Image (cartoon, helix red, strand yellow):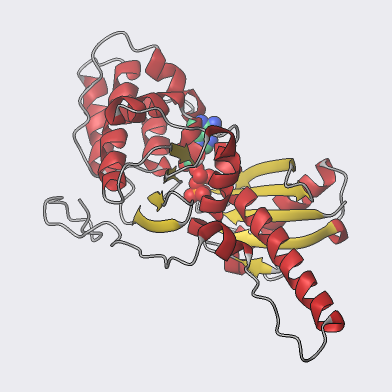
Length: 318
Ligand code: ADP
């Protein structure tokens, strides 16, 4: 049996997935990215190997992705998180059908990825300018409400009254809005529900830019928040596919790509030895070609600058 690893070094969390030759996840781990990005990623990787009874030498191919992917110099390959996310989502979404729209909310950005009916990435939109609509917004809200981010879903479902109106589109202003709502006597549960609806509305604006096609799939750490999932489904009027481990799908996708790259390279080496020089090499496709097709990635603009925010923040987002 051979083993493959994918490490997704995100802005907030490092995610590691180890797979076997059958693409089964044999272990995964989530750890804080922190300031010592490489060290923390390396520690998480080695700790996971230890947990699953493997050594570094047992990993045939290591692929990194995420914003800190290039820091991991001993990786065999680095890959963009859009590609890794798409391949991971396609794989875990298989039992549900063909995933057409991926919503990913991370610690500091949110993305919408559109796949065609053959599962090829055809477009994506990203908000990486503004904390509103990201995990950071949820972390800030939880801190102000003095609850754990992991309890936001429960607070959402315990809301009895009307969700509080959270109008601020900017995380900085939302913070003072939340404090103001608490001062006016609003319950934390209703505020949490209001926050989730506000994030859902903002996320759906992003998704509409790539097109809302079923099956819709949602991952990233905030997909663990059942209240946010419910708000997105309410606003969309559609059900979302949520994987069992939504935070590690991109790391899983990276491991799959690594396995295919390894097999591709191995096959090429074998053919070079065996092939008659006069024979024309057969056309081969890499995993990226097979799973994502030849269609170019056409990023539609990331969050457009707008004057409507009206804040002194330099990001110039909506
Ligand atoms: P990144 O890849 O940018 O580091 P992640 O996809 O790992 O981001 O998501 C991190 C965010 O996920 C955190 O900021 C937090 O808001 C949210 N999160 C993480 N774990 C949970 C959980 N158990 N319940 C709810 N939200 C969570």
